[in-house]
Image (cartoon, rainbow, N blue to C red; front, side, top):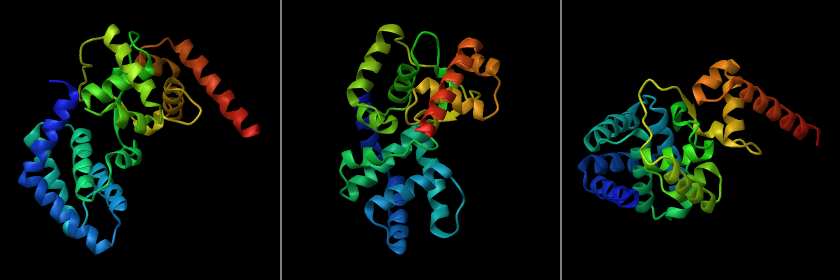
Length: 233
């Protein structure tokens, strides 16, 4: 079964699940009370499910339902959130294209262990999002702000280099996806810049992303020049 068929099967199972009906009905009550427009509602629901902060009243009942759904269907948080948002979007008659453009990469966590010498950084990221997390190419395109053709080419390139699914463990260090999509920077540049801002040494970054620390230093220096150049323009 390919990924698109798998995603479709998951969606159908979620649609029929009474837990999803309960979650949707509770959220619909919240939406009406707050007077939110459909697209505003999607952003608000995503924020609740991603931040997982205990709220008062009806909002607090959404998280236990989310956890039950996650356990019942053996899905990752990102997979389930994406499925729920798309299904709720259908009920609000929001087009899939509009939803994909409005999906936020904030708080989607990327394990640093996906990066290896065998694949380029964009290739690793696309492979992980598509195969491990179940995102479609248009969704990845929207999340990374890259052309769909670029995403497809990157993915098919990985098939020739690394056929197996990327192995992830719970102990893996992670980075937020939105930190990898800085305007004017490559995935590698964004990654190294963000890790340096967190206070990591060049040697530590090199170990985490399987690159020589001298290369890490070179890339970071290049990023600083780019950013300083932008400020002077």
